[in-house]
Structures are given as C-alpha cells and as structure tokens.
Amino acid sequence: MNIFLIGPMGAGKSTIGRMLSQELNLLFVDVDREIEERAGANIPWIFDVEGEAGFRDREESVVDELTQMDEQVLATGGGAVLRSINRANLQSRGFVVYLDTSIEQQLERTAKDKNRPLLNAENPQAILEKLMLERDPLYTQTCDLIIKTDRRHPRGVVTDIVKQLVRQGIISGG
Image (cartoon, rainbow, N blue to C red; front, top):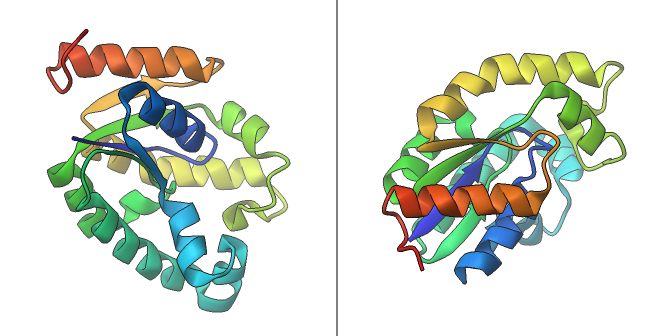
C-alpha cells in the first residue's frame, strides 16, 4: 500500500504525512528532502544553479523511483503534478490524497520559510494565486481523495484520511 500526498506548499503534506505514516505504521518519505539529500544541496540552491527545469528533472526521477516502493506515505512537492509522467506514476502506484488549503493559509504557513524559491518575490500572494490557478486542476485530476486542511489541526486531518481509507476499502478498519 502506498499513500501519496499532493497539494500546494503550506498544505501540510510533510507534517500530515509524518503523522499518517506513524498512524498506519508505514515508512514516511518526503520527495523534497530526498532531492536535497541526493543533490547534497538545498532546493533554493538547486533552483539558482539549475533553474526550475533542472529541479523538475530531479523531482521526476525521484518521484518515479520512490513511487515504485511499497508500504509508504510519500509527501510530494507542490509542483510535482506539473509533469504528466509524475501524475501517471502517482495515480497508478498508490492512493493519492490532495491536501487542499486556501491562499491565506498558505501565506501564513510559508511566511517565515526561506526554503521556498518560488515565493522569493515582492508579492508572494500573487504568486500563490497564480500557482493555484495552474495547479489546482492538476491536483484534482490526479487525486483519489480531497481533504481540506484550512484551520485544522494535523491530527484531525490524519483521522479524516484514515476514515476515508477505511470507507474506500484501502485499509481495513480496526
């Protein structure tokens, strides 16, 4: 069983993914952390040196490899759905949960995070709005389940995801 978390930056993919993996006794893997580990550099550095295309190439390779593993909760980066091959790999190799959140919540959660190269700009809200316009249809098309995370404690989100997994027969209730 694989559970893949998709959604915009600040939706809670890493936090919720960690908690969900503990709840389900599965391995937790974060695509962005894996990319950084393999590159020996952080994401802003990769963006600076290789550009977004270079980063997306690395991401595609890591998503392909990681989605072939079993028994995991995988947190993807917000832009992982931009490439059709990533969407296909996520859909065909696991159960995809879209963690949906508002622009306001994203701004709150990412305000102090310097590790988000796409937000290093004059108007982060305008960037988040543009990204959501482009990516929301891709998240929706790719997912098996949509869960809202706005103003919610991660524990409640995890509980909702587990209930849905039981209801849909992905895991057995117990």
